[in-house]
Length: 294
Image 1 (cartoon, one colour):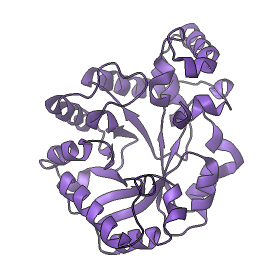
Image 2 (cartoon, one colour):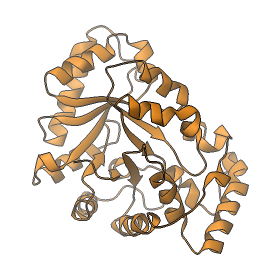
Image 3 (cartoon, helix red, strand yellow):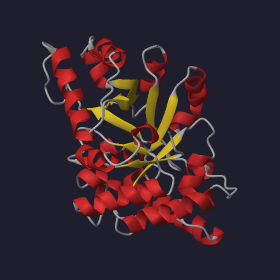
Image 4 (cartoon, helix red, strand yellow):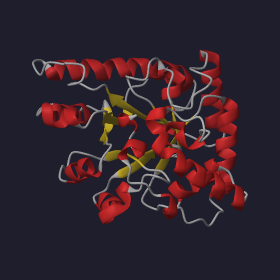
């Protein structure tokens, strides 16, 4: 079952995020975070083979749960980036899927995403191989994680895909242009949005941001001024923006601690009641909105 909030688990498997002060939690802490999420209605979990031992932790967690009530998204590790040869590609990919299934203690993965869009062009057999894995019941939906709208436009032309994961937040509105989300929904896509908090950048002290992100200082000052004057939190503002877009099926959030998750769930419940126009915060500066450029 897909919940409106999806717990992103990169932080549970490795040190992740520009504003992560706590580092990777201990396994018992990670399991406690997952349990708290589940007990509060979050049944969707996002992981990847590249997220350290995140899959293993999720596998241990869902081993005691009704699998049909858990919705798991995992991702194929980038192939070209890791110099995977295209000889014996099918065997290599099936091996990676089997490893993820073993880690997750599951007979299937609900969504299996291509982690790096460029792999679609570099490996012409990649999508047919994933289609074969879907036909075998190892994965239920084929998807891709994208960074740029042109990548989503390409995916729209390919019938094999069911799921897409996009970045979207109060600064990054690129995917709202040209009715892109509407067209994705019309073509039957399940749409996940990530980076609601821009990997923690939105929470950073404007006077303490890294030198390479100084161009974001004015944006952060403006956001802080707005939330103070409206007596809301940055988290509530960010979640309200994502919730206001009807085409989005689930919002991925990542946390470093159970306390942070508790606060995010509270903010999510409040955010749904707010009436806010976040269009004023839009930025077209890719150095700010694309974490790959950090």
